[in-house]
Length: 530
Image (cartoon, rainbow, N blue to C red; front, side, top):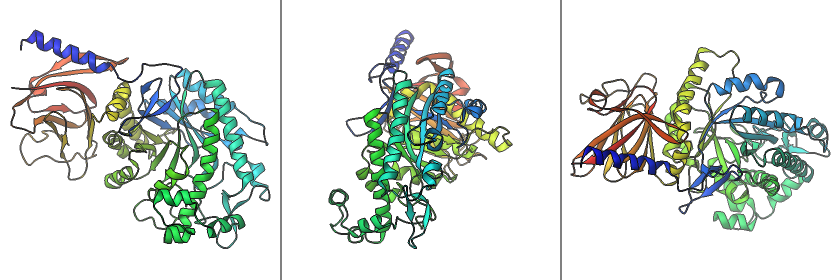
């Protein structure tokens, strides 16, 4: 093969890889969750796959008077999406009267900075309590009752069995979405909505009010037990030792289903619920974590009880890579793509974004990034996440499509795993070596980097064509059969407006022993055999 024909083949492959089989971008197309033939979920925005790289504002940073400062801090992370709360107590200061100033300010700010929005409805539940329920409700427990604990004492959670509580939330949430449709229905600045926040109850495993107790003593819903493969009968007969928590999950999910369903009828944006995780060692619902939330052991029940909720997001606050992956694996399934709806604002969590890539997920969000006077640790966290986001955002649609077609691979540096192998297609695997150079030039000396910051992703763009990006890693393409493999070309460059722009060809020292990523960068690789 001549050099000219080799170059033509390479150029054609580059052009073909840019073309996406999904529908072309349409600014008036609703954001949606596309479901592939194999059940894989993909978030679609403007008709194209979208991978969320989000910065989430602190709980009280979405007010117009402080929004400018908080937003400026968020932009330092190079996100493509901002997550910010909508407070029920502010939105409905008196029954049936709605104040849309916070919503409008956030949309205006997102448009002026070319960012997308995910709005978080802080309604009946916020972190297992009721602290964003309007004061006119919390001050009237007769009309808007609270849950009762096993002693009959009220707790800081609204009863999910109260029709008044439910209808109040539905009316406010529908008003919120109706306004959103009015001001954003043709722009789709807002691409997704979180309904409630870490729902469930702290202070009691379940509601012990009169109506709740009567329901608990009755037969569990037949359609629920049938779907979950449980025996018919009372909650105790159907769910055994988990009966109280399962009852709480059903009552919470059923309440939220009615809220989400009513909102979807008005403006059908993708909707998710985020979850306060039940980590390893957490034993006591209502104490260690909110009882009734969509923890991993209640995920099937939640899916059955709340079909209008598209996704269950994971709020993961751990630096342990094993625990992080364990949580992701509990939620990454055919009917629930991996979605880190919150994670700790720490440099240590930055590489874990690549765990979501490895699972074909839809996005990653970092919480509490707006620090007016950041510490050295917070500045390091901002820099680490910004490095990830800046590298990945230009290829967010490529990542989304590759995830849907199972052409996306990724690895993260872990203790004792300074060298890993990624199985690829067409007889190839990638040998990735993390840590400081020389990355395994001499057998037996590969070691982890001090900050455990190595990560890498690989997308197969076409046969023998690969897009590779990462940080603190060396990548070698190795055959898994008896054929002789070779790297024919490595292009250093970047995607600009969806088009690959090559800066230079890498060769010699840069590729003779593998492709070296000492800082975040992206290359396109052509392989072959001889």
